[in-house]
Length: 109
Length: 115
Image (tube, rainbow over all chains, first blue to last red):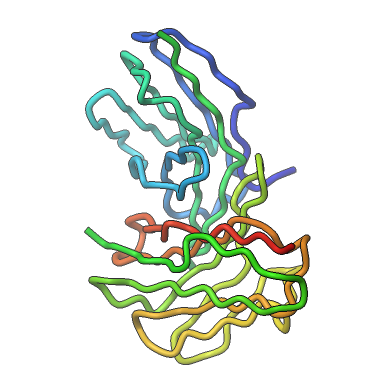
């Protein structure tokens, strides 16, 4: 079993749709959690950190469930520009990052 | 915000040659930097953790004599792919964090093609 597992993609949604991604992690000692966005052939860029209380940034909402060891990302009112691969990243206290394989989202007109 | 500069962005080299990739933190000091490799349609895989002033820590299966890492200052880490072979062709990315548990900033990546 992989340390970090994400929903298999691809997700193909129309503009304006709401889409949600889940990610599960196996290391209960994991300390911090992030969602990154990676465009084709580019470096990953931090989308948002994920906090236990849940956090929102515009159309994006991230949540963490430590008991069930999963995090989620919700995108509302999808835009064409949201098309990308979304990576779930889990850090241990030592700072080691483990990446999920990513979920590809394509938003269509 | 924290900026990480990686150079070169693209390199093509012949089999058997060595390639050096630089990773610089531009506006913060990074005692630790990370080197990743990403093959097409695959996730980023951590290769090694670069520690300023000490030896790098390599992940299982990564040859330390092939992937030489030097972290001689708080703002610069280098990865040298020695005696490169076509199977080393990949996207190499470094990252560093200005603030612990605040996510990592990635360099722009280096696309290495060995012919």
